[in-house]
Every structure is written in C-alpha cells, then in structure tokens.
Length: 353
Image (cartoon, rainbow, N blue to C red; front, side):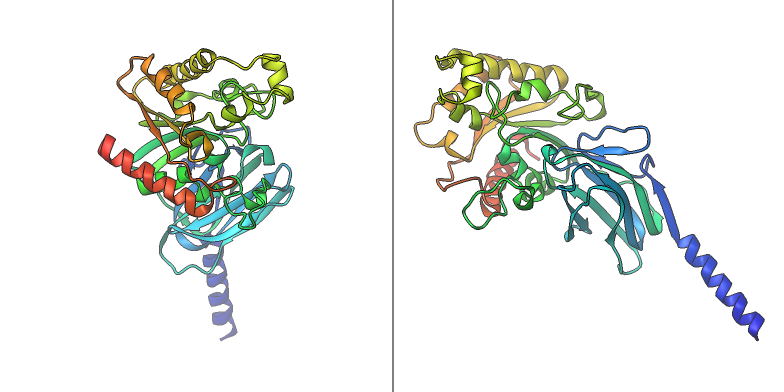
C-alpha cells in the first residue's frame, strides 16, 4: 500500500513539474508589441505601451525582469481585463503576473504604462503553469508619434495638480491605446512628454529620436520590423507654448531673441512628415493635434499643419484636429476616452476600418 501511495505521489509530482513551462524571451510564440529591441539575453522595453503578449493554456504566469530605476509601472491584462498594476523594483526579479486562473486558454499582456524617461526594463522570459500557444494576430497596425498627451501623462491624477510622476501616468488609458484596442490593432507609440518638432522642454526634438531603437541611445531602429497601415502624428502642443517663451533656455539656444517665423515652423513640420513617409511609403499618415490649447479657437497651429500637409502634395496624408477640451492640465482618463471616440469615428469614416 505504501508503495502504491508513493508511486501516486511521484506521478503527481512529475506531472506538476511538467506543467511548468519556462519560456525564453526570444521564443517565437511571444508577441512583442511596440518598438522593442532584442539584446543578447533580453528584450528591452522602454517606450510607452511596449508590451509582451502571449496566448497560453494554463492557470498562472510569472515573468523575470530587470528594471533600470524601479519607477516603471506595468498593467497585467488577462483576457482583456486589467487584473493587476505592477510597480517594478530596481534590479532583476521574478514577478507573479497572474495565478489561480481557471484551466483553459487565456491571453496575457504585460503593458508598459510609463514612458522611457522612467527607465528601461529588460525582459528575460516567463514561467507558465501550463503551455504556450500560438502568438496572437491583429487586424490592423498603427504607429503613433506624440507627446505627453499620447503618453497619458497625469491622466490618473484626480487631484487637479497635473503631476507628471509615473504614479499618475497610464498609457493603457491613453486615447492611443483605446483607439488601437477598438480596431484590434498591433501598435507602437513613439512618444515623450514635453517633446516638440522645433523645440522641446529639453535639448532634443522628435526629429532627433524618431528613428532610434531607444531614445537615449544612437542605435537606429530597423523600420522593416513593423509596417503600419496608419501613422498618427500628434505633435506641436509643446511647440505652441515654447516658441513664444523668450525666457526659456531652449528658446534662447535655438532662436536667440527672435521667435521662429510661421514659415520656419511649417517647413520643419513638413520635413518631419517627409521623413515618416520615407520610412513608410505605403502607409496612410494622419497629422493630428489636440486636445489641449493648441486647438483652442483662434489657434494658428492647426493652420500650420494644414499648410505643411498641403505642401507635400500627398493624397494619403490627412489632417484631423481634436476639439479643445477647455479644462486645466493634461487630459483625464475620461477626456482620453473622448479623444478616442473622436478618433475612432474619424478613422471609421475616412479609412472604412
């Protein structure tokens, strides 16, 4: 009898061990969403919305990651629902993403909700209580180039202080992700709070980094890895403030004492869109703006974009401006939903998605 019980115990133990599946970062059944370079032993997540997505059959998943600064937040999304928000610790560690799921097939997304200045995360792999399935597929592909609005900066700060800490930034609730999810789109977000096209709140602009694998590294991105059907550019909000701020150090460095002319601004925007077109010759490009005060009534900035686009003589480049939200600070979660609803309606009507 003891031998029978021991045999049964060993059989269950072996079965339990077999249920644990170790998945290396470079497993082809992992789908990486966003601009994620592969390093020697890890995948590097830095940009807002960078994600690890898997389909699996099982009940639990753990991930091994190394966070650069311990300031990044991730949403764990299981079967379309956010089940956990993780703030990573600095250094290498294994994290429980989900446990106690009912047996069966599931989809898990590990979504980086904070932007690249909060640090990089190196992803090593997964430990699944179950088995990995074929990777997910998507109906569409979208790429965004944006600023704090697209990042979702301060969208979860309900105090009215408009704080820019990673604690209050949720790229998952950004209009960019909401729109992509609506259309079942694989998407990439090349976005940074404070960035502009001719001037930023720091010493570089989007044309300096748009083609880099990681914003603070000169290594170039291989644009053949992702070919979006639609590119959405939502920039100029920071330019609209800083091109008039003669006391700001970046203004003095770039322009001296004389604000840039409309022609200067328009030409720089046009050149940036030319660069995007060169990378994606077949994509539709949507030049957007809003929903902060760059689209208020009487603003000249939508007109700058319209003139730049008109000068490109490209029938597959469009313009669309979000209505001015007319409230203080950055868009809230609700205002991001309003933006997404507006953008979804435009894309549906214009591109028949």
